[in-house]
Amino acid sequence: MADARPKPRSPFLRALAFDDSLPIQSEAVRLWLNDIESPTRWSLRPLLQFLLAMLLHLIWFVKRLPLPQFRAHGLLQRMICWFCTHFVSPSANQLILRHFATESNILNFLIDNSPEVTVEPLALYPRRIDDMLDASFVKHDQELFRVIEEMGHWRERPAPLAPDAIDWTHWRPLEEGAFETARRRTQVLDFESAHALFMCLFCLLLTREEYRDAINGFNLDQSIAIRIGQLIGDPTLAEMAYNKYPHYLVGPWNLSQRFLMHGFFTEYLYARLERLRLAEHYPPNGSTAAYTAK
Image (cartoon, rainbow, N blue to C red; front, side):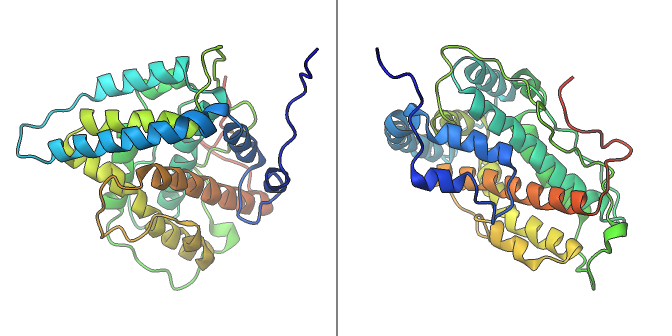
């Protein structure tokens, strides 16, 4: 009879499970290690990324020709949600849902602690895949651009905020069981394989301007880290940003890695701020009820 015990992790992966030198929640590490060990990540993903990267650049070239532009946001999001529900692994789906919540928290923290401006907070906190039909990836990008624009020119702080002056009004901690993900036997695709399939759809079903903005929005990571670093007195936050220099616009080259590193950035920065909140014993108040499924 075959041994049904799971294959033990390599020494590196075992070390990775405990390395939180860069701030990251243990739940995010657990989900990522599950994703790393997915068979499709090591077999299907390299082929998908190679073939679909060529297709992506072909679509990108055609979209940049002087042809009429079209968009199909609803179709795009319905296809993504259907694919996630039936083929993407539960761990990868939870990582996707976590990304919405971590980035919304980071931007809301920036809004709450910039009292000189009036900006509507983000409400993009999907708890299940079907919620992304409304809290879509397109809206996720557009909300980031809206916040940066409405905040206006950044005013450098002469000194960081005192701990008791930090505002957590719209912060929603990610608690255990925050996300509902179905489990089907067909759900086997890892996070990066799923993204390889999605990236061509995005390029095809967005206008060339929308797609250009979406793939360059990652580079605002550095700007956000600099701003929050000034607010809490931690200039090292900018080192967490892999995507940098937003004034230099790029194309879809190396998109998979840039997308993945954007996800790590929001996890790192969320965890750093959550540690700060817990260290100062500031429970959520007002609308900051723990972000758990009901």
